[in-house]
Length: 83
Image (cartoon, rainbow, N blue to C red; front, side, top):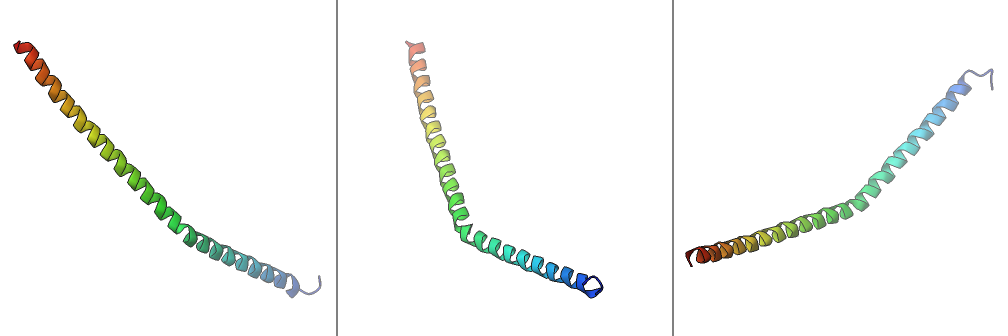
């Protein structure tokens, strides 16, 4: 084996091919896993979008209540000043 100069090279070539095949398989598996989990990512973004929309609606409604309350307080203050 040591006398044959082609033997070490053939071992390296075989090892390189095996590594390449494992790498290609790992990439293929990763692509499949990402494709399977893509739906979960979309659902997560949709859920976040709904939560943000609800938060904005809550803040807007609260602001409207505060504006109404401030207007009522101003009316009461004006009545109190004129009395």
